[in-house]
Length: 272
Image 1 (tube, one colour):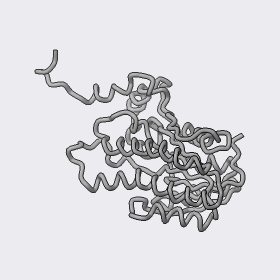
Image 2 (cartoon, rainbow, N blue to C red):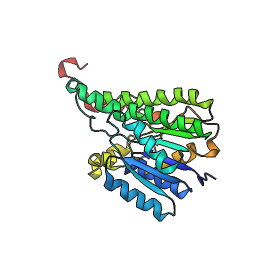
Image 3 (cartoon, helix red, strand yellow):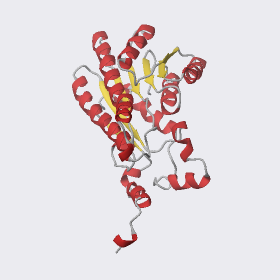
């Protein structure tokens, strides 16, 4: 079950965190993997781990915020791998989170939407074109966020970008489906990765954040990679256009409303 033997995958954001975990999961299942990210050192580490599993691997350094970079990345991946059976768009950051909406600039908007939305869109288009040309019934997976489904004050750019990718996923799932190409997404809750390490420093922080989830812990990268393994496998051959929530049951609780209650101080004169 979930064999990736003979398949080749391109994974953005593959140097650390969720992208790295997915790359290793695919390699363990038999895939050869190209990983792309801004940091060559992190990519080299992931490539080394994949090769230790007996699979072929390639490091493709890239700055996906540069115009034309997403399309060029797919071309480079095809040059070294010959084909792309699976594309995973996992690149992203949270650098503009927790900033006042009033302080946002044009540069902030351009950075977030280029890195998250435009890169996912244009890598998907370019990879799908190659799949159609080569007759590959491929799979595309976008890593979004629970933040793209529920509003979070201070995260208007990040949340709206992830929401756009959720819509992109369902629309491309419809358009590419006629070519046998499936497009899905995973929307995780808080996952313990280097991107959020500063929010999980103290035991008090860890307990507080875990309490947002009915399962009473934050997520691990393996929670996401297990779902990614299924969604791009042959066993998920009739699953497309879906955004799968991996968030410990948070969406089914009232925990989503705790953030504004904790951070929205009501002036004394307005209290009942």
